[in-house]
Every structure is written in C-alpha cells, then in structure tokens.
Image 1 (cartoon, rainbow, N blue to C red):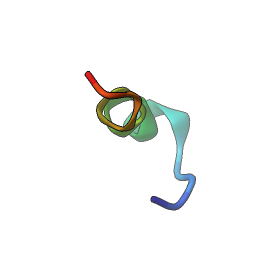
Image 2: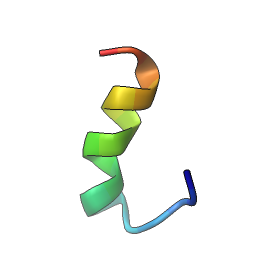
Image 3: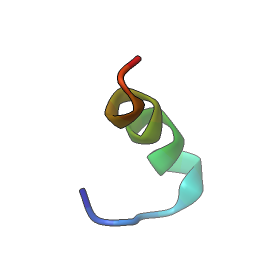
Length: 19
C-alpha cells in the first residue's frame, strides 16, 4: 500500500496492523 496522506492512510494503517 503506497503512503498517502496520513488523514486517509490512518484507516488503512489500522487494517494493515491486523485490526
């Protein structure tokens, strides 16, 4: 997953974390 604006990436970051 490419690094986009943290505002939108926050949701993706959580999914990638295993949540």
